[in-house]
Image (cartoon, rainbow, N blue to C red; front, side, top):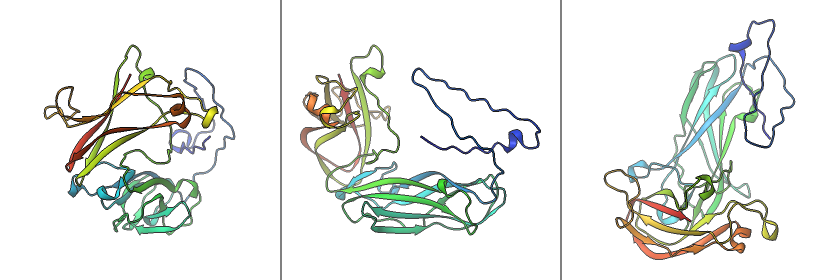
Amino acid sequence: NATIRLNVSSYIGGQTNARFAFLFNGDYYFWMVDDIAISVSPSNDLQTLSTTMLPDTALGRFIEYHTVNENNKTDIRFQARVRNNGTIAQPNVRLNVTVRDTFNNVYFTGTSQFVPSLAPGVDTFLSVTTLYHPFLLALTNVAFQAVSDSTEQYPSDNTLSRQFTLSDSAFSPAQTLQTAHTQIGTGTFAGSSVIKLANYLELVANDTITSVRAILHSTGNGASATSSTQAGAKVKFSIRLSDPATGLPSGFGFGILCESGEYTITAADVANAAIEVPIPKTYLALGPYWLIAELN
């Protein structure tokens, strides 16, 4: 369920008659569209379009990680792209970021530089001036909010939320709480019996790997859980270097630092919607690695 607002002024502005067509394009199921309204474009309407949690690139980390262990954390710079959807220029546009835990305790607040005047229809990239230094082992919610000196008429799209976890041992690019859910697996590729999926891991400090945790697609919990993952399916994990020629994961017989045994998914795993597979304890020096999941 979602509410979507679209500025159609450039299409129907000044017209005496207008029609809207809705096209559903899908393989199954259905959709419903309800409560359609046409209104005058608001004067004051900011929107946060996208967000970034930029790590310390000077340490060799360039992509976002949403779960970082204490040993491999970096400072984070919060950034967002903000658009003026209103009809008049917005004064002193800035980005406010607040980091809270699940008990609503505030860990961090920061504000970007001010844009003195943001013209209608224009977007800008804002960066919070103070870096966030994760310090407490916890799941946190990061709220990115676009504000100006005007009174906002549609505040519902001013804020986007992300999640960040500082952990004692876990390290992952995946968001802790998923804002959108998708799945991929052997059933996605017709005719393929073996599929390799990869995560790119940028270590900024020496570390050791001992196990790999993977989330299984599931609906429901416990005995009532249903899943497209089948008990009896097999998976194997490995840590690999990059192939110098391609930058992609190295192949069999080259650059494989360690790998788990072949793990067989059980009915209990499907019900739990997760597996944790031990991998031989392996020292990893700082630098980039590939974590490969080989599905059978």
